Length: 345
Image (cartoon, rainbow, N blue to C red; front, side):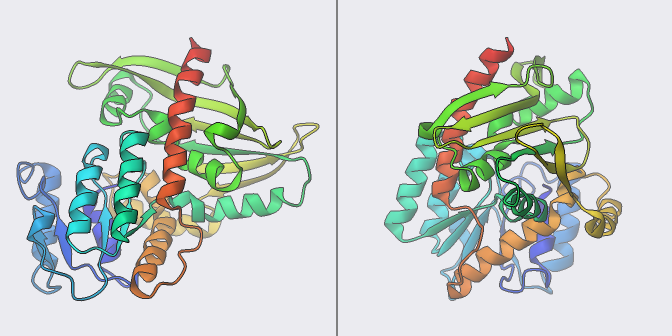
């Protein structure tokens, strides 16, 4: 998500429990200042820096000691997150909002969780779909149909070309299950008892799924799923499916099927009809951004506000995933990726 889009959501009344006081941005304030994104960022900085009394800097070490409870929103390159968490804790942050997947590997994320726990710092995750309307509605309906089967479908709107997908594969080199589909895996861990120890089987839908090896802009080749669908069955008797398509469009949704006949009984989209007008307005305001930013906008605001309110007054951040959920989610992603790739060979 464009950094200035995230920041504008905080520098507004949409997150009433938070104030945007500091922006740490080494790229747009450094080597990337002359890029198109850097110029947009500089224009926004000029607009708000003085009137809003926001400090823009390139390093967390430049921040003064906090006088009120401080939350850090870490939304950088995944590989930088361990260092940024350490610096955020040293900078006096009481709470950390960490974007998915949190770290490149389970080992690093476990170390981050241990570091935060030792410092008495709560780390909450930006898994927005945990609080999404379409997830809540789907889970509520499924609970009324014994033996039903739920499928979560995630779509992006990349062009279905080697150039577009190759760029996507390189920029998201951790792979689809640690990136695009990690939100759905977090749902499975949070609500469906999915863990590495509790997975009985995982089965790829070979008719739907596709895996490609493509060169990225650097010329280096990357192998990843451009679309994947699979079903997990747990040792405790639960079954749930996930489908993710890099080129599937702008909408995500979930379905509930009859467990015996496979008849679809329920489908709920994100965005629904109520939210589409807001999505259209945001797309017109930010025409260069990926459309999925806007379909998820309200849910990201919900997560940010709940995390900010937790930091400010200790209110429970209902539905927001913890770093422990994130660790198990990353374990599941690392477990599933080689198994699914082997099934698609």
